[in-house]
Length: 382
Image (cartoon, rainbow, N blue to C red; front, side, top):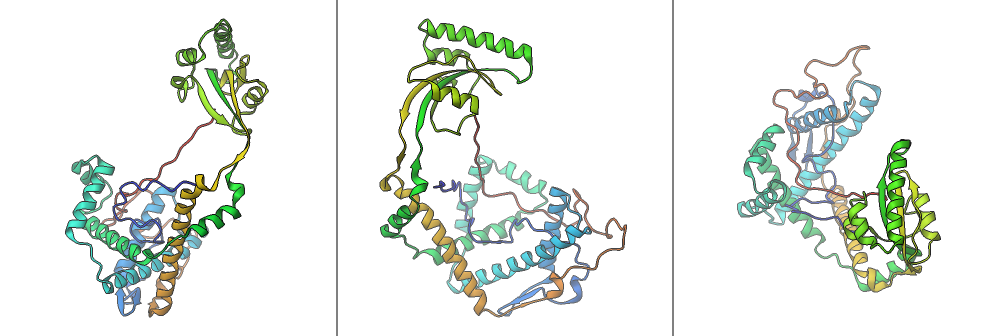
């Protein structure tokens, strides 16, 4: 079972409203033919202008060129171009539909809500420093007016999302059914507990390895003479992630540690010390702890986590189904010329006049606004 992601400040961002245009990582080529028609799309009579479409396209194109150096004149770039233009058009259409529905429901993003959410953003991302925020806008060539407009739109769409999924409910019977059908997910293998002291040595450097081994042997002698493992770990171990905790590695199963360490640890009896064990990290002295037998987590232990997962999945599906039905019953007209691939440039032509090169920004072009949500996750191996 995976844990639900940390929500952070939220600030009205809808995590599962797919393909929002704001800040989307999309790209396309130069639409020199954009002025051939008066609209990019019509959604229930509401016009999406070619200017709006090409603004998003050019901004996104610049981002892709800068981030991955995409050449939209190449064969791969042309293939990507067609898909990305369609994605941008679809996003604009869906955005228009959602805004229309929000208006019908009487939903609004007022100034008080904007101020409250903006204050949350400043505190969460900029430690309350408005100057740092303004500098971020300037660095990204984004105006405050653009940011405010798009941020209010995010607040509005967040309200719409909450309205659509408000009746989603998960019954206890659903939780038990999921648990029974996925019981293998909750099985815990046999594990052991252990502490260790690591003396680092770069693999292959003989002098460094010899020095580390000598130090490890000296520490082992102190332990055999009655030295306190936790104190010696705190004073000598190079594993900064656990040295202050006496070298405690917690409980781990097979396959979780590097092989030489694993083999040595599992051969020990509870309370027994290993000799210096060489791994790619250096030399370890291991003290074996207790054995935790294999077990299956009870339903009560995992019930809350299952509820979070099922609610998240059901809300997402509910909103996606609602949006799909809304599109099916709406009158949508797309200017297909704007989503077609442009003619291939002459052989050897590096680029078209006015086309942004990787890392460049055309006059009037603006990259996406500062990010409003953080994702994090990290780990390490002993």
